[in-house]
Image: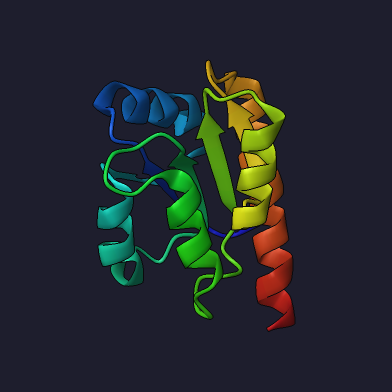
Length: 132
């Protein structure tokens, strides 16, 4: 496993960010709380995340668009992105997959499920890193 995984939590709602951070706290990750997709894109080089939790419904730039931008960037295309969404329609699921999302978590978020999905995505990232 990655020694101390860096997990970005991107959500415009401070309570939602803190809730996700609280749910992940037992895993001892380095948690990076970011308030918007634009801020994530501006800071990603210095953040260097191992996995990104990305809210879908955000002002200025929604999670689908942020995901698509990251997945088309050579340096960041292999960083797993978990979309966090209250949207439950099949259209939203398809849109997220088309944008390049690796995984989904539905709101309200279940802590055990979230931790398992993050661990799974970190294993994928570790395998990719080992090959490159």
